[in-house]
Length: 152
Image (cartoon, rainbow, N blue to C red; front, side):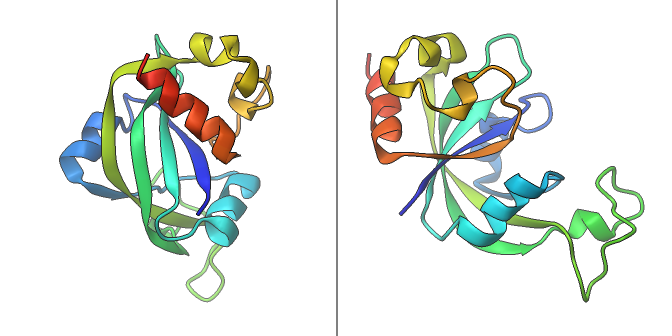
């Protein structure tokens, strides 16, 4: 099993929305490295740290798990979608997504500030200046450190 940090802007898709829906496709990713993580490395049951980004208090808001492995993102084929890609075809899709399932909403967000203060997390991309990738692998040690932080 692997661990991942997946970023979403809460005004676009939040942990509360995932909790309400129970499962959701992680669509609209248009970065090749993030796509490759979903397409090539994410497996059924992998754990996801659900991270709220580009908001007043960014941080880890809860947990999800991969409930369906990589498959073509249908938004790339929809001319009405903001994620439409005219170069993608059904025979040769460019963009892939996974489905994630709600696991838990944290009582309190583990803020970016808190993550930056933990020596054990200093190598995580999310705490690095200029890191903008929406999906990143997380080591088991980093994952366990973050889980401990939610317990106080």
